[in-house]
Every structure is written in C-alpha cells, then in structure tokens.
Length: 68
Image (cartoon, rainbow, N blue to C red; front, side):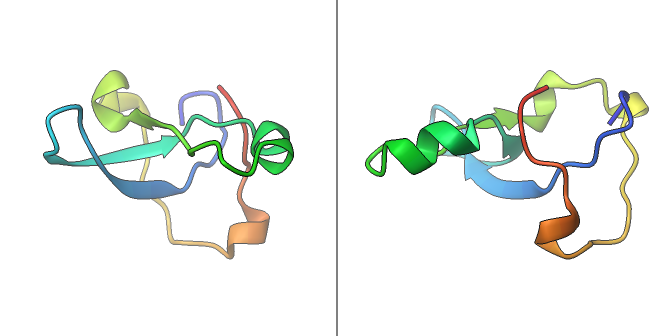
C-alpha cells in the first residue's frame, strides 16, 4: 500500500452482490471479543491503485493486519 503496509486481498461482494476484491477493515481484537460480529472489508475501488503494488503472497502470519 502507499504507506508501505502489506494487506491480504479477499474475494468479497459489493452492496449489490457483485463480485469484488477488498482488504480487511475489521479490528482483530474486536472480532475476538465479539464472535458473532462479521468481518468487514474496504473495497479496492476505494484506493488509488497507482499507489498499490502487487507482491508475491506471503504466509498469513507475516502480513500486517489492522486498520489503515
């Protein structure tokens, strides 16, 4: 991402049920404390893709998780 962080991209759907791609928008600690809460995503269309670089997939434990 533009700030140097690395984010895992998820297959999601938009508000109309169409296929979309997004990154995690949920607070991991909140999700742990609220097991019935749903993970939320920021759609990639919200970002200036000229400031994003696609890199080789890493192990999920190596990824930076959290908000922007």
